[in-house]
Length: 312
Image (cartoon, rainbow, N blue to C red; front, top):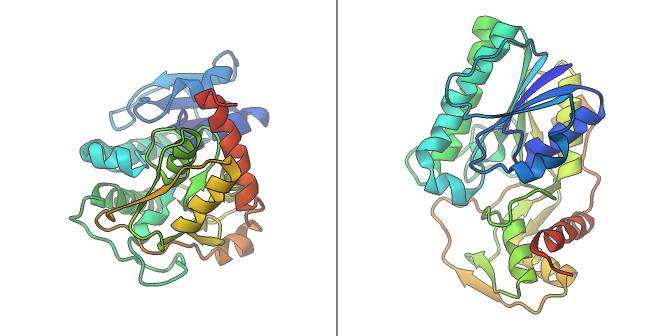
């Protein structure tokens, strides 16, 4: 198949490019490299089945080739970036999704939206099932990301209803692994880099807020399975094993052997207190659930960052 991936040089997108090429597909990777990196795809650039196009998908995008799938992953997904670039974040979610859906419509291709657990906001229901509408601020500092994804879902289903575009929506919960940017502001990369550099691990708030972390290989399998079934409803993809941020910090200190201390900072506005997916639908419809234990996934991610930072 011919597959277009927006955000294909990013953390998740680059792994997806590798996985799809290994299966014999042709991949067209579109990325503006604001948060993505050519380093993530450098080993793919000489592959005849891989075509990299440096472009901002929030602008009109035209090309002659037919495609079978449009996988829309382009997004400024980490707080550090979307807080610094709120308008670009909104444009990626709104105009980027609009343009990618237009391509899918014109090429009669199937479409997958990489949505997010952030559409649930600071949830009042725990764990979060797909039928929960969320508790989201439309005016707070995080709204540029949260609302862009909620609007992206609305656009996706408008094209599904009005133009019969065959759609899939993956609501992705916290994911980690190799190819994360060392300076992306996400908690796993933050803690590992701080620990390896013997700096204080910065915990925002008291550390009692909880998250569930899914290793990249498990997420990729979930995305693949979602493309293989006839399911147009949103599906949560994430790990249902829940840990507090303080527990995560302790585990990373142990696995890195770091003597770094923990430093508590003030909690950012609208930061969710709990985040855990209800993956019942993924189990029933996709036959999928994560397999990688947090400790094992962190060990692989730590090894990646050691090489990235030149640490032994």
